[in-house]
Image (cartoon, rainbow, N blue to C red; front, side, top):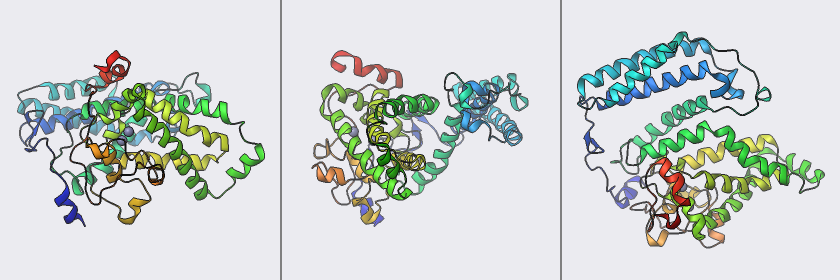
Length: 391
Ligand SMILES: [Zn+2]
Ligand SMILES: [Zn+2]
């Protein structure tokens, strides 16, 4: 199956020489790899130190009580020392000193703050004691480690485009989105859920709501997937077809390389409107909390997977579930695929409403926005939809 599909996958137009990234050699021995590892380690170490020092501002109340501090301290020590050493190695090997310098700087700041010996300030336990939700720096670190551990090997072993490096074109922009959405996860959850909760909880009679919440969990999850995807389908379609809305959604489509990180690229207005609308029927109907949580896990996994640079086609399941191939076509810039495949969970909605597109074993040749292209970079993209003419 894979051999057949490989022939039909057009080779990526970028970086034929995988030893070059942004025009610079990244070969072993150039100090590039040690620089990146140094920054990743000292950065993670510094963020962890900040989380321990300012838990009420930078950690999630629901996770705070579960961290095994003695183990974290021991790991922190190793991480900071290794980050520092990799930084020194990069400095000695690489002509451009920025990576090594940043790695050493992060490790030194973490050390000055107290390093692995840092004491935790008096923590106000529980979210209810906090006037405002905290920023979730711990959530960012945990998520980044989890997704990297899952998808970096997966995208190496089962790559759709083998010549696409981890640090491909646009990765900084996507990482910025990933960082901000993880950091603000509690705020975004409130902004997207509160209106639905407050405005729609009364819609159905309490007896109905109770009986919906009492159904078997698997049935509730299937119902939630069908309902949210129906709402999401039309919201998504509106974002494509209404020019004012398209400028916000064009940001998501501006990704020209697909991988697990590319799906993070979403304008805040797109997130708030689409999610806010999808949640409304859920709160109106009164599904059980466990079903909502199950849905949350599925949507996160599926939304990440469908952007990934993996060649899995999922056999006959692909007609029932949105797969990477299905969503890669949604991101294609080929004429035949424009305004197709709006669903995120179940292709049935595209099939019913005439926007289904899955041409056999083929994958798109390239991705991106046709016509007026948004600029690259988180902040430029944040303001771009508000500019007249979109230039
Ligand atoms: Zn779209
Ligand atoms: Zn997408």
